[in-house]
Amino acid sequence: MGNRIKGINLFLGLLLLAGSAGAVYEGSQWWRAEQANRQIRQSELVGSDAYPLQKKFMAAYKLGQSGDHKHAVQSYSQLLETAPAQSDQALIQYNIGNNLLLSGLKRRLNDDGSLKDEAKYDLSQARIAYEQALRLDPAARMAKFNLSLLLLVLPDGIQGLQKEQAGMELSNIPVGLP
Image (cartoon, rainbow, N blue to C red; front, side, top):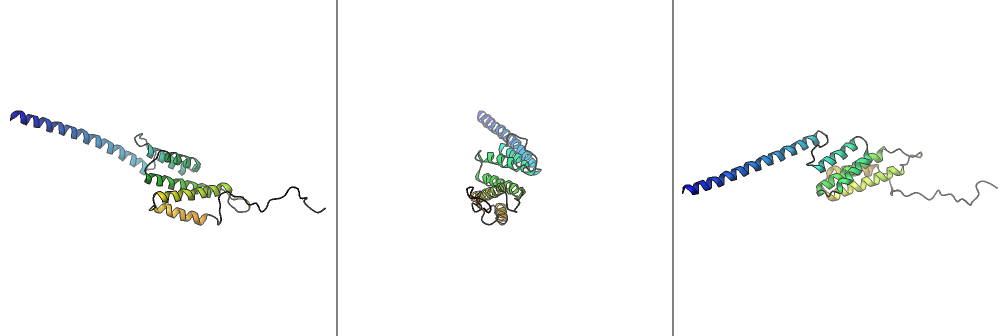
């Protein structure tokens, strides 16, 4: 009976040791996640390589905040290539739409008051990004709101980058009176 009690005690001791090691490991993982979350809440770049998606996301977010919308969209697009979860894809598409919207609104107007082609392109791409975000997450209220704002800003009849052919001159017709 004494050997049996020693065997049970040895087994329980090993089980306690394994449980303690697991608790220490989980505690360290929790602490690293908390540090990354703190950095994100404070709009800092994530320094840990354990969270590459969040690190790249914050870098793209910082680019957008600094006004470099073109590079922010490129960084977000690179994030989409990593095949994140569907909810993350919706958030990335939403941020792509935000950067394209801001880029389109910053573009100057033509002399006649119409939008430049680059602005039309950015705004139409922002619309596509917002719609894609809503396809991925239909409950995304911020994407719905920004899409409705974008639709209010878009001029009626915007069709991408089509040019009007009505004002085309024919080169073989003489100009002026004979």
